[in-house]
Amino acid sequence: MAGEMFSVTNITIGVGVATAAYVAYQYTMASTKPATAAASASAAPAKPYTTKVSDSLFSKLGEGNEMAVGDAVADAMDDMDRASKRRFEALVGALVGDAASVSCHWTYNPANITAAMKDSGVRYPEFLSPSCNDFFKVPIGSFSCSGDQIVAVMEALVGGG
Image (cartoon, rainbow, N blue to C red):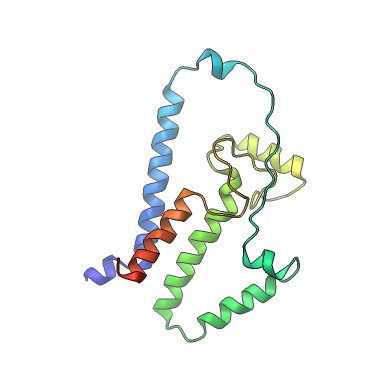
């Protein structure tokens, strides 16, 4: 029973729920604070952040080779049993979702995301460039701190540490 409690899927879900709860708490706390004079003053717009991750499988294979990555993942999963495949898919899903959304992190006003999508000429916000995240700058397509936590936990579990 204890082994099932600490499965990759349960830990991934736990990290996601804890992160969502923390973000919701921070948002609630920020929205209840009175606006300061500095916050309400208009500032010059920052230069758009468009740096993209440069060490991904996609960037190494080049544009248009998405199927090669999919084939490599499918080949890696061939010998996995059903439970291992589900764990693997949950972990990959969490990490891809984190990387896909990093450029919209902490942007709580849907109108800002919609405007950024319109300005970028895209229909969906995944891997949005330029980033509309004004709180931290990491290359678009890399992990946020949440993705880094997932990787660190998985490395510790796999490594026995």
